[in-house]
Image 1: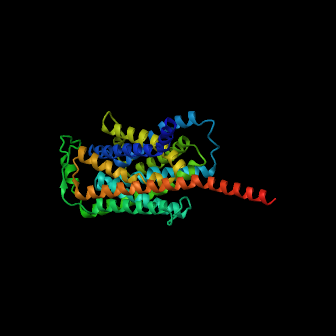
Image 2: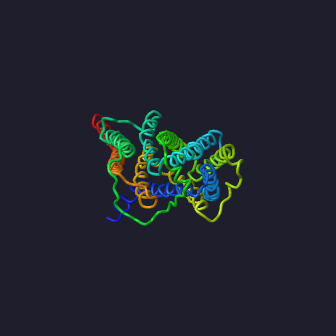
Image 3: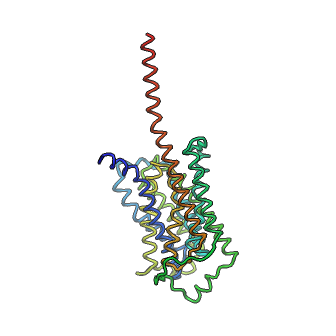
Amino acid sequence: MAAKLICILEGMKPTITMVMVQIAWGGINVLYKLAKNDGMSMKIMIAYRMIFATASMLPLAFFLERKSRPRLTGRIFFLGFMLGMFGGSLTQNLYVESLVLTSATFAAAMTNLTPALTFIMAIILRMERLAIRSDGGKAKVLGTILSVGGAMIFTFYKGIAINIWPTNIHLLHHHHAMAAASKHTQAKQALGAFLGVGSGVSIAIWMIIQAKLSKVYPPYSATALASVCASIQSVAYAMCTQGQKDWAAWKLGWDIRLLTVLYTGVIGSGLMAAVLAWVARVRGPLFVSSFCPLLLVIVAIAGSVMLDELLHLGSILGAVFITMGLYSVLWGKGEERMEAAQLPNALKGSKDSGLRDVTVQA
């Protein structure tokens, strides 16, 4: 009984890990909004995030994978550079700009196109099987449709406002300038949605590259390499667009700005990225991306409680569909793993039967 329980817990390890990753990322969304409310430049914040990620991952990669790390080839460096771009500098800059133009919940909703995009890309690259005739394949397709449909309901249908838990927690202290800037026009909402979709596309590409690099390079070293590349890219972008105009904007103090870059860099882009590399290696990129809708639910709750963002009926309905889609994809992946595990036994039984037939005929 104990051995069976240990086996079950071992099989659930990737699922539990991904839930913890989404909770950690939910905290990033809250901190992003707080840092922006404090007047911090989003481009500089992303640059610092990548720098702190590099500082935290390089020692781990050096000491923990010094003996197991293969030689850095041109192909591995190219994959690391692309991983840093699509998983770091490009994705994060698109995402934070979307978050600023809309809200934390809206930005998270837009990234829920990631599972569908990853599923399509993984099929094209033959990293996933469509297998529409099997129960697992049908469940994955249905789950993807439900997740994307739920995200669309969440985004475009509001309905009545629902105030489930009135709290006195108001972390956003709006200044007059910020209050005026928060009155987003429809054009800004449309631009925010477009940037959010772009972020989702980048995340999908990142997960595909992550799965490829994790097969030839250990997770901490892959994350450290990507972080170094993302740091160079992000700092160059920030300096070209803003940093050289005001060097005082780069100054950090003992405040929410330092907490944001520390948390997002060390936890978000450092440890969580290494964990994702491990999960992508053992379960594939689709399994990783299927948990993205869970982030939307976490951010919606956190935004309602801490950032005074209103929940609407559409938010609740969208969250229900997203959760159903998540479980459908997970069930489909589980069915495929069971079929894959049973296939060698079936082939072995067929081979043994054939040997017995040959022996009898002899």
